[in-house]
Amino acid sequence: MLIGYSPVAGADIVQKAESWFANVTTMRADFTQIASDGSAAVGKIVMRRPSRLKITYDGVHALNLITTPVWLHVDQPVERRVTSYPISETPLSLILADPVSLRPAGYETIVTERSGGIMQIAINKERGEGAGRLTLEFTASPFQLRRWIVEDVAGIQTSVTLQNQVFGVTIENMEFRLPNYFSD
Image 1: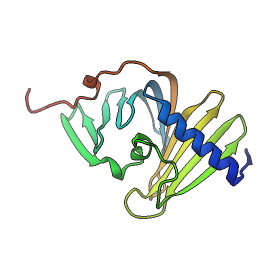
Image 2: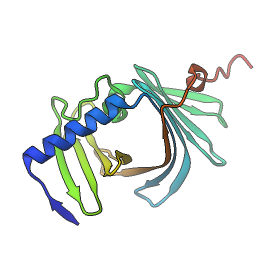
Image 3: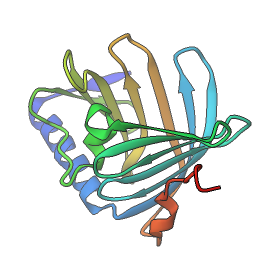
Image 4: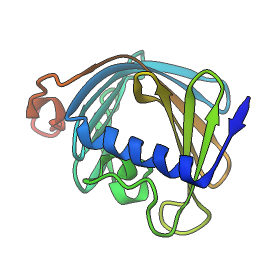
């Protein structure tokens, strides 16, 4: 249910979300991911701002997404393969930047307040590098990220809901180390 929107309130929510990211140094969380086709996955997220994120998928076809300031590495342990993409071409670049800007040039930002104390910030780009939509959902109390939804230019959506978030924990560099499958 949509409660409403005003440009002033929307700007305040965006600023509050940018401040939230600025104040997060580290985070660990569990997640549940749901894709447009209904498939689901679970796993763990480790974040050390700025620029470092590791998403580990549990299950038979385990997968790790590991970011650096420049790259998003997709580690497929079963296949012993790592594929790398420029982070700037992914929506993750928006939340891993320092500082985070949820009103970047060339994008449209739309804020929606929903019932139940949920605020959504949708960052949309119609074409070009980084085209698609990233929607960030925050809870009002406490104000924190609870979910993000990525929609690509083909309309395929992936929703990631965070659970059991813990902030300010020690995270060593080793957690973001890429495997070297050729040295084995």
